[in-house]
Image (cartoon, rainbow, N blue to C red):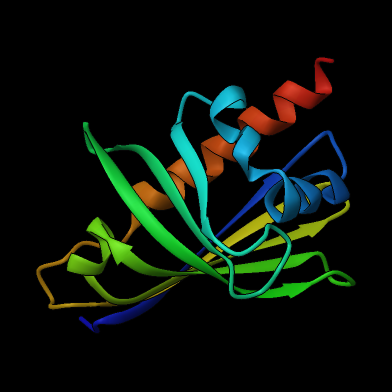
Amino acid sequence: MGLRGKLVAHVEVKCGGELFHDHFNSKPHHSPNISDKINHFEVNEGELGTVGTLVEWRFNYDGEERVAKQVIDHIDEEKKRITFKFIDGFFMELYKTLSTTLDAEENWISWTFEYEKQNEDIPEPLILLRIGIDLIKDIDSHHHNK
């Protein structure tokens, strides 16, 4: 088994992709109010919607609250794509590198997790992918039911 990998999930949504791009680009701080998957979000340094901004997420992972600190690594407004690179927190104990990209296309949202595990005993980040999928569903349900 290799140490590097990529996980991809595509989720069909009722709300348009623009809403999701806008949410993760400029309003991720609303996530804890929309989804019970996210306990807390804050900007540690910088400004939302800007590459280089440092953000912190707190969420339940495998029964325990975990912290994920990320930098906004790339934003493509035209393609509605945002990449977050994990830089600190629990997951850096498991992975040498870990990033997640959100692609928003009309009624399809895609999460791509790219990673390199610290060693072969570390599992693939399937639980993180599941949290991402659930968050998309919660955001879609929240906005569609308004």
